[in-house]
Image (cartoon, rainbow, N blue to C red; front, side, top):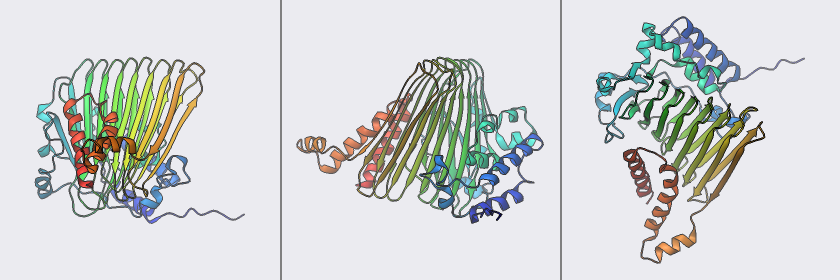
Length: 440
């Protein structure tokens, strides 16, 4: 009987060599080192996800990731000074924290401005010093079988651990800026761990931007929300035009909680934005929205799994895509209702607006329901701008390009309007307006 030999790609070989070289230098020993080893074994067993893996059928990372970029080095003083000009959403009154090339930079952060009930610890220092908070790292990732999450666990070397105490209400948003500032290609593996106590409230904003190099981002956020807490999370992906971006949200939500999540994608050559949300307590309400505005040959894939493990919870998912040029927008959404999750209320929708005949929209909404007393539904649409509405606007003296822009902004606005922070909502609509102006 002939033996089957698994052929490794150059990227997979490069990642194996990089892990072997970096392993002795990565911070954290004992349980952390064992967690890294287990995660990398998972990656080696599976390899990079490809189109034969159902969850990645539209985003073949084995083909997209031709090589493994070297691990990003800690930023130099010159790089830190250069990054001072990269301040997305600087208009917000926020507690600002900066990860430059995947490393936490105190000079570009304001840890001294933290509020009562809020603890923020740089991950690399916590790993090196054996801080007790390190025990929170990897708890949610351990139950996830996604290969890219495992790869982030294997290589994670920096990021942030954030803890909000029971009953604390953080009145200013926490703004985490992920900036890639080098001119040469590299790979980053940052991890954020946010634990929100009972009855607490916090607003987390993540932004991603970078240079024109073909860098690679693999970022993950572990988000544990206790009973009665209220969490808003907004992620803005404006990476450089040659970058490969993979980011993962792993959220576990308690009872009587409120969770609002929004993702806005305009940058990156290829983006994989994945969300794994588990409802672990009853009477919880989650609103998970997103919008993408793509052009040229950009590719953006949003993949969502909403796992209703208990009953009496409500989830609303809405994702909008505006696709121009030869871009491709992908939405894969799955609502799972476990056997005991009676009275679940889940609705999911994905809508794509095609501005070019060469653009492509792929949607795969799914329901897996194992309970019999639920209200669940999903839907997806794709189409061009409404000619009747365009005619209506043009008949009132509005030029064609402005008429198109008004309709596109209204289309995106339905998803954006769910953001509770008014200032951030306005900034995102301004970003959409800039995208439209560049298109004109």
